[in-house]
Length: 361
Image 1: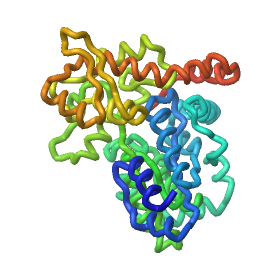
Image 2 (image 1 turned 180 degrees about the vertical axis):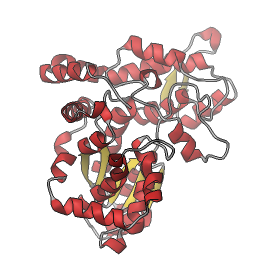
Image 3 (image 1 turned 135 degrees about the vertical axis):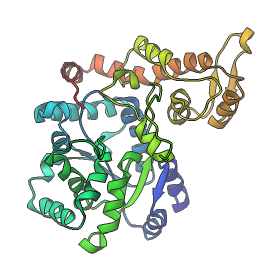
């Protein structure tokens, strides 16, 4: 695979790419690139964290990039996830890995790194300290977005440390590409800004799109917010089960969530049902069929998401058309994962344990 083809795969992953020229230069020099994504183990795993993350990692692996997944158990503890119970957090981390296996991701080609191992090294904490000294408290607080918090929240001292830890993760793991969601861009920009002054290599950032909640966007948007901020404000939440489809939902649960989801006729902006088609269905299928009765126009075979969007905007396709077909496609994607947890006794016990835990924001 040549550099152009590798760049094309990276661009498929990133809604926003910062430092693309830097990535291209390293590829042309035949440098072995390292990318990473990190996650807080914090309860059930929704379809964006499961299926979409697996597909994104697969594309970067195909491009010849070594991928590290940081299981951010200490970060989740600092952010009071799972009630601040580190043992539960670590069980959830193991559960996430099992879900990715069930999605078909070859985890043998991925390096899993646990934050609880990084923190044993004094050099890691020295990096955290250097980062904290190089920036202001106000800038760190602005980075609270990466934890699903806001600047106006009553943050704990542990949550104040969190952004410096995440920046340290990037440097300690010797990352060329921070491949994280759009909600993580503030800390990636901080890492890029301070890297040279601290003697670290400046990381590029490949930010993937954040799927929005299935719930109506009532009272969540401020007129002055840009598109990125709006998308982050509207993202799905594990603490709100009906805001997302989860990777082990049965067909009835999928149907219930999709049927009640926000999907105004003819409206494209911030429409979660259209987003599921764009970022999930068309990610898996090059062509998508919308099945419907002849009296409603008959079946449609679509070659691209834009074709679907145009038809919906003109109201040639109705919300119920989208929802009925989306249920079928999501059920097809999730069925192998459900089966994996039915036949794998160890994974099944782990899933049952996770489902018994109370999810905390």
